[in-house]
Image (cartoon, rainbow, N blue to C red; front, side):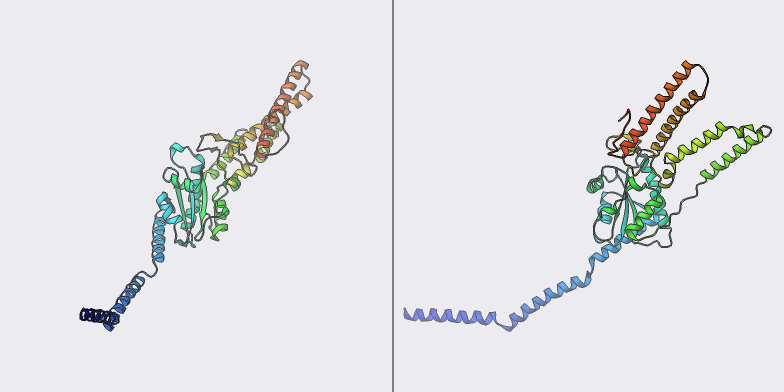
Length: 356
């Protein structure tokens, strides 16, 4: 029994010694080191073959955008293209994005007008000597990228946004159409403020104004030629007075502002379909609004003319009294309309007359 115990103890001791020798053997140590080296070399190989994956992706994106820009200055995008080329990093270029609704069923007249001006700016940049891959123009139509409108929390169109090369858009990166209009010159000025890229706007030649002016002079010249033997109408005070009033109406209604800013004729809410002819802010107006103001001014002037004529005429007293009341009613009613429009645009204006 004692011999068995000695043999068992000897066997255990030899086993422990053998195990320690095997673990600490140089061969196994070299093998372990080689395995570590192989793992290190594999990581190094991956890094050597793909040193800058973000730069490769950025180069592909810029190359693709340049290819699209060469075919069409304004790149049409959907939700996927927007997320890949406008929102996703890496990106070292700026994107001017127009969000619009140009499909006929949307009946967005303002969108078509804004699109024309946006195309002018994009074409001016595309064929500018300073054109580079640092600025691109793109558009998203509501029917092709409704998810983009939801992402940006927009519920109206058109709208212009600037997406800088680094960081997220700020408050100033949304173009204020209501305040400045959407004329190509205004858009180019806003782009210069946000990107330091100067775009000189080149408009296509428009001969309609020259043709209209030529026709007007032709008409006047023909009229003077036909009446060359009787030019007394040139001394007609009524004709000159009507002409002067037309000029006054045009200047006081905001026609020059329309010519400079290029506002839309009216605005149709894409959600409700309601058309607005009066702008709700004192910083902007619609073309239809100026036409309405011209008619109201003309009506008030007509009422004042009636009051003046009845005061200086020597006709029947009863008829003069009726005409006076009619003139007074016209002045009071249409002047009240003017005040109500003024009050709707200048919120907090305390005065009104007949109509609130």
